[in-house]
Image: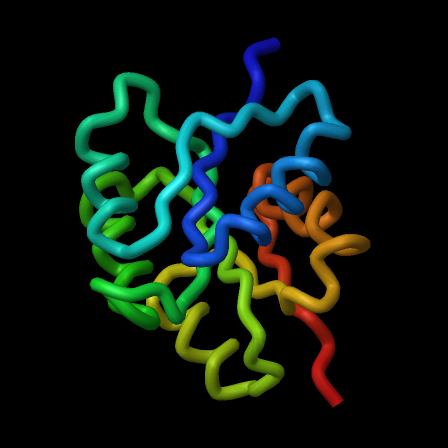
Length: 133
Protein backbone atom coordinates (compact mmCIF):
# COMPACT_ATOMS: atom_id res chain seq x y z
CA UNK A 1 0.00 0.00 0.00
CA UNK A 2 1.32 3.45 -0.92
CA UNK A 3 2.04 5.79 1.98
CA UNK A 4 -0.22 8.69 2.90
CA UNK A 5 1.35 11.88 1.60
CA UNK A 6 1.57 14.85 4.00
CA UNK A 7 2.58 18.51 3.70
CA UNK A 8 3.72 20.32 6.85
CA UNK A 9 2.87 24.03 6.93
CA UNK A 10 4.23 25.89 9.94
CA UNK A 11 6.40 29.00 10.20
CA UNK A 12 8.70 27.41 12.78
CA UNK A 13 11.37 25.08 11.32
CA UNK A 14 11.98 23.50 14.75
CA UNK A 15 8.34 22.50 15.03
CA UNK A 16 8.38 21.02 11.54
CA UNK A 17 11.47 19.00 12.52
CA UNK A 18 9.68 17.71 15.62
CA UNK A 19 6.64 16.75 13.56
CA UNK A 20 8.87 14.91 11.10
CA UNK A 21 10.35 12.89 13.97
CA UNK A 22 6.88 11.92 15.19
CA UNK A 23 5.64 11.09 11.69
CA UNK A 24 8.81 9.10 10.98
CA UNK A 25 7.57 6.51 13.48
CA UNK A 26 4.98 5.34 10.93
CA UNK A 27 6.16 3.77 7.69
CA UNK A 28 2.81 4.47 6.00
CA UNK A 29 3.23 8.28 6.27
CA UNK A 30 5.41 10.27 3.88
CA UNK A 31 6.20 13.99 4.09
CA UNK A 32 6.22 15.31 0.54
CA UNK A 33 6.70 18.99 1.28
CA UNK A 34 7.10 21.75 3.83
CA UNK A 35 5.95 25.36 3.82
CA UNK A 36 6.80 28.22 6.16
CA UNK A 37 4.01 30.54 5.02
CA UNK A 38 0.60 30.38 3.40
CA UNK A 39 1.63 31.38 -0.11
CA UNK A 40 4.42 28.80 -0.12
CA UNK A 41 1.84 26.19 0.88
CA UNK A 42 -0.50 27.13 -1.97
CA UNK A 43 2.36 27.03 -4.47
CA UNK A 44 3.36 23.58 -3.20
CA UNK A 45 -0.19 22.34 -3.68
CA UNK A 46 -0.46 23.79 -7.19
CA UNK A 47 2.92 22.49 -8.36
CA UNK A 48 3.05 19.12 -6.59
CA UNK A 49 3.25 16.11 -8.89
CA UNK A 50 1.79 13.87 -6.20
CA UNK A 51 -1.03 15.56 -4.34
CA UNK A 52 -1.04 15.18 -0.57
CA UNK A 53 -3.70 13.32 1.33
CA UNK A 54 -3.25 15.64 4.32
CA UNK A 55 -1.99 19.13 5.13
CA UNK A 56 -0.98 19.86 8.71
CA UNK A 57 -1.52 23.60 8.99
CA UNK A 58 -0.59 26.32 11.48
CA UNK A 59 -3.40 28.90 11.20
CA UNK A 60 -1.09 31.80 12.18
CA UNK A 61 1.43 31.56 9.33
CA UNK A 62 2.41 34.73 7.49
CA UNK A 63 1.16 35.57 3.97
CA UNK A 64 -2.18 33.80 4.31
CA UNK A 65 -3.50 33.57 7.81
CA UNK A 66 -6.18 31.86 9.71
CA UNK A 67 -8.97 29.90 8.25
CA UNK A 68 -8.61 31.58 4.86
CA UNK A 69 -5.78 29.12 4.25
CA UNK A 70 -8.11 26.15 4.82
CA UNK A 71 -10.54 27.47 2.22
CA UNK A 72 -7.78 28.07 -0.34
CA UNK A 73 -6.39 24.55 0.19
CA UNK A 74 -9.88 23.12 -0.39
CA UNK A 75 -10.29 25.22 -3.55
CA UNK A 76 -7.09 23.79 -5.00
CA UNK A 77 -8.02 20.22 -4.10
CA UNK A 78 -11.24 19.46 -2.21
CA UNK A 79 -10.04 15.91 -1.46
CA UNK A 80 -7.08 17.08 0.65
CA UNK A 81 -7.71 16.72 4.36
CA UNK A 82 -6.62 19.53 6.70
CA UNK A 83 -5.48 19.18 10.29
CA UNK A 84 -5.12 22.51 12.09
CA UNK A 85 -2.21 22.50 14.54
CA UNK A 86 -2.71 25.49 16.82
CA UNK A 87 -1.64 27.15 20.04
CA UNK A 88 -5.18 28.45 20.56
CA UNK A 89 -7.19 26.54 23.14
CA UNK A 90 -10.35 28.31 22.14
CA UNK A 91 -13.69 26.88 21.05
CA UNK A 92 -14.14 29.76 18.59
CA UNK A 93 -10.95 28.80 16.72
CA UNK A 94 -12.10 25.18 16.67
CA UNK A 95 -15.54 26.16 15.35
CA UNK A 96 -14.02 28.34 12.64
CA UNK A 97 -11.64 25.58 11.56
CA UNK A 98 -14.45 23.07 11.13
CA UNK A 99 -16.72 25.66 9.47
CA UNK A 100 -14.04 26.37 6.87
CA UNK A 101 -13.57 22.70 6.06
CA UNK A 102 -10.80 21.38 8.31
CA UNK A 103 -11.16 17.74 9.32
CA UNK A 104 -9.25 18.16 12.55
CA UNK A 105 -7.97 20.54 15.19
CA UNK A 106 -5.05 19.68 17.44
CA UNK A 107 -3.28 21.76 20.06
CA UNK A 108 0.48 22.03 19.56
CA UNK A 109 1.01 21.15 23.21
CA UNK A 110 -0.64 17.77 22.57
CA UNK A 111 1.08 16.97 19.27
CA UNK A 112 3.65 14.62 20.82
CA UNK A 113 0.90 12.25 22.02
CA UNK A 114 -2.11 13.01 19.81
CA UNK A 115 -0.69 13.71 16.34
CA UNK A 116 -0.67 10.11 15.12
CA UNK A 117 -4.16 9.28 16.49
CA UNK A 118 -5.50 12.50 14.94
CA UNK A 119 -4.01 11.66 11.55
CA UNK A 120 -5.33 8.12 11.70
CA UNK A 121 -8.86 9.28 12.49
CA UNK A 122 -8.83 11.92 9.74
CA UNK A 123 -7.42 9.60 7.07
CA UNK A 124 -10.12 7.05 7.93
CA UNK A 125 -12.75 9.68 7.16
CA UNK A 126 -13.43 10.89 10.68
CA UNK A 127 -13.22 14.24 12.42
CA UNK A 128 -10.63 14.90 15.13
CA UNK A 129 -11.37 17.55 17.75
CA UNK A 130 -9.90 18.04 21.21
CA UNK A 131 -12.00 18.19 24.32
CA UNK A 132 -11.81 21.71 25.69
CA UNK A 133 -12.90 22.44 29.26
